[in-house]
Image (tube, rainbow, N blue to C red; front, side, top):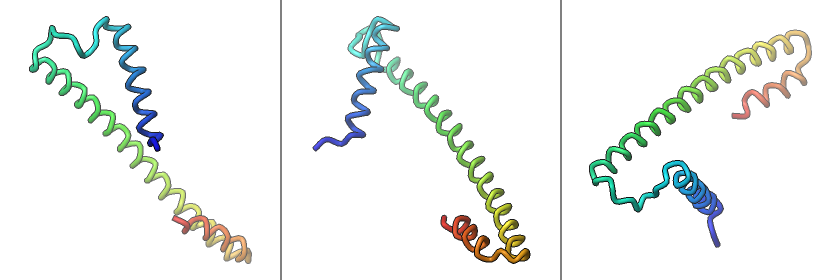
Length: 100
């Protein structure tokens, strides 16, 4: 049985290799680069990857903070519903807020 994630990644590798061949006219079997030059390419790609990772981490933190603000607003709404005599509705809303 094949892992669908592995199969997806293989397909993406093949697609990327084909695009690279069209764009650059060479593949990784080329012999015009030294080992040091290959390592330089790798280092540059990894640095790009670290930048992409940082970008996503910043976005995750921004969303987490937004969720905390939303939870605070929902807790305030629950309190107001309780004060106004809407305890069943407040209880249903509380279940949503506290489900995480």
